[in-house]
Structure formats: structure tokens, C-alpha cells
Length: 139
Ligand code: FAD
Image 1 (tube, helix red, strand yellow):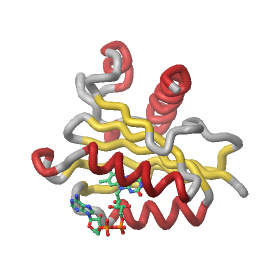
Image 2: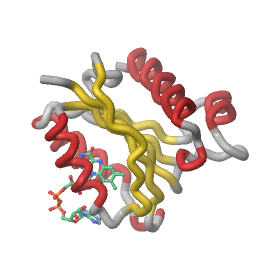
Image 3: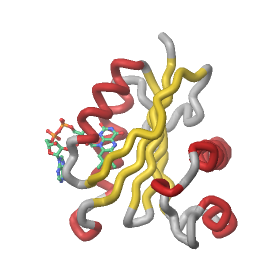
């Protein structure tokens, strides 16, 4: 089955009303049965999510996620064929700003804060690659 990687970013609708634990629980429950892996970054304002899997499974999931009222401005950044998963074994790896190291935040942030909307495609890719390496050592 050809493998794809989908990346999008969004803004949380209301930080006080969103439970990332709930989102992760649903993701991990659903993604495993659809052979979807990936990672979710969140800093209480913006989400950046990478999803890996088959084209149909990813498209169906992204349509569902885009309709979720817990976030807004859902913006597709890329959907590309890939040779291998960057987050194998992770039904949804979670990266919170607090867990990320300060040097990484400085390297990939705009004006000192995580803002995937302002990142170039190359910066988004570099950030995801960095996170994938960290996930591989944590697995
Ligand atoms: P149901 O669970 O039947 O929900 C019906 C509707 O209510 C949907 O529109 C749903 O989006 C919304 N909803 C569900 N729970 C809540 C809640 N607690 N508060 C407000 N609205 C709610 N799902 C995955 O399967 N895999 C993922 O990787 C994934 N990543 C996500 C990342 C983000 C940033 C967000 C916000 C959501 C993510 N979800 C993910 C959840 C996804 O949007 C759907 O809620 C989930 O897949 C269940 O879909 P459903 O059609 O069965 O909806």
C-alpha cells in the first residue's frame, strides 16, 4: 500500500475547553485500527499534526479532523507520498511545548513562540524530522 504523510496546523478554539488527553485517547484508539501513525504538537494555542498512512484513510481522517470544533483555521500544509513512516509504532506521539527543549523552540519559533502558521515548509519539515528522531529514542 502506498504510504502518505499529511501535515496540517490549526488554532485551538478555546484552550479552556480542550482536553488534549481526550484527543490523544481518541486518536490512539482509532488510528491503530486504520494503520495510521503520527505526532501531535500543541502549545495551548496552535496544533501541528503529522499523520502517516494510506491515502484513503488519511483523507477520511483529515475530513473528520477539519470538522472538529475544538480547533479552527485548519490549514493543510502538505500531503505527500513517502517511502517510510517517521513515527512508526506511534498511534499518536504527543509533543507539548513544555516537553520540547528550549533550543528547539528557539530554532523553530517565530518571535519566541511556536507558530506553525508562520513557518516555512522547510522549517516545518525540519521540526518534524527533529521530533521524529526524539520519538525514535523515546520509543
Ligand atoms: P464523534 O466522536 O462521534 O463526535 C461527533 C462530533 O463531535 C465530531 O465532529 C467531533 O469532532 C466532535 N467532538 C468529539 N469529541 C468532542 C469533544 N470532546 N469536544 C468537542 N467536540 C467533540 N481523531 C482520530 O481518530 N485520529 C487523530 O489523529 C485525531 N487527531 C486530532 C487532532 C486534533 C487537533 C483534534 C482537535 C481532533 C483530532 N481527532 C483525531 C478527533 C477527530 O476530530 C474526531 O473527533 C474523532 O476522530 C471522532 O470522530 P467521529 O466522527 O467518530 O466523531
